Length: 269
Ligand SMILES: [Fe+2]
Ligand SMILES: [Fe+2]
Image (cartoon, rainbow, N blue to C red; front, side):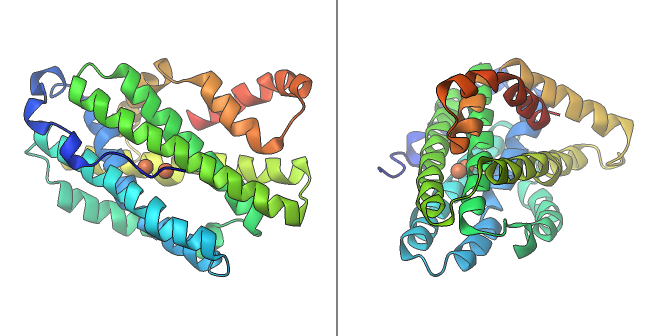
C-alpha cells in the first residue's frame, strides 16, 4: 500500500483565510487537541513496537511509516493552529498534556494477544478517520479542508494496514466474534477519556487558566465541541469500519445496525 503522498509543503499556510476560523472556539479546541494527540502518538508506537518485536513486517511498518505519518499529522495541525492562533503557547500546553497523557499510555493498556490488539487499533484508526472526515465536512476554510482531507486519507490507510494484520493473526489465534467484539468495545470505551478529553483540556486551560477540569465552563466547552463533531459525523462510515473485524454475514451485518449506532453514541459521548 502506498505511503503518505503529501507533506507540509502542500499546505499553503500563507493562504489561510484566518478571519473565517479565528473566532471559532470549538474548532480551536478540536484542532489543538488533535495536534497534541497526534504528536504524542510515539508513546503508543513504542508500546506497539515492543509488543510486535517478533514480527519484522509489523514493527518496521509501525516505525518507518505509521509513526512518521502520525507525527506529520501533529506537525501539520500545529502549524495550522499557530498560523490562526499565534498567541497560543502550543509548546507549553503540549508539555502539560504530555505529562498527563503519558500516564495512560502504558503497556497494560494493550490487549492480551496480537490479534486483539490489532482489532483495537482498527477502532482507534476508525475513530481518527471519522473524526477528520467530520472536521473536513464542517470546515469553511479551504486550507484546513485540504489539510484534514490529507490526514483523513492517511487514517483510512492506517486502518487498512491494521485490519490486514488483524486477519493475519486471527488466522493463527482463531478468536471468536465475541472475543473480538470485546476487544473492539474495550478500546471504544477508552478512546474519549484517554485521548479526546485530555486533548481538549490543555488548550482550554491555556485560554482559561482559572477554570477547573471538572467545572461547568470546561464541561460546556466539551459539550459544544462534541455537538459540532456529532452534527457532521459520518455514521455509516464509522459503523462499517467498526463492524468489519467481526466479519459478519451480510444479513447479520444489517441486523447489527442497532448495536453499531450504540457504538457511535459511545464514541461521541
Ligand atoms: Fe493521525
Ligand atoms: Fe492513524
